[in-house]
Image (cartoon, rainbow, N blue to C red; front, side, top):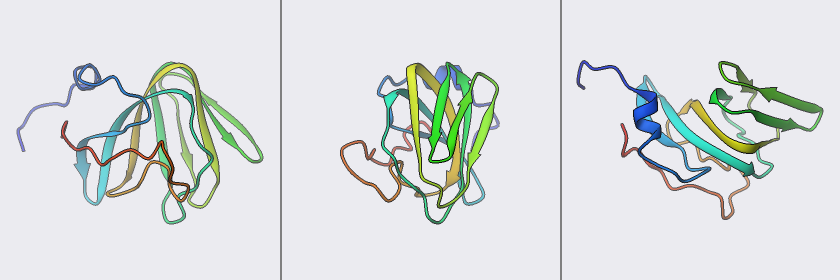
Length: 122
């Protein structure tokens, strides 16, 4: 591990695909990921873990069955484990995600938007 800061803007400039989180660092058993989001994702749950969304740029709506949470730059929200949710980004949104290692982006849903594991930016 190099004793260098991680430049989030530089890491974000290295990819363009949406809904495909990239691991940029590890913290104990957790992974710090960057993602670009655009459009509507899928309703899904993560049965065994909470999921943290921190918005860096844009506006992200996290739909929950009992109401929406809207996040702007500098705001975060933790989706509790087992809570069904569906992120929506009208324009492009840049986010930091913090999750245990190995969490699949579509949780229990699966499907075409399931991203392959990518730690190429770590």
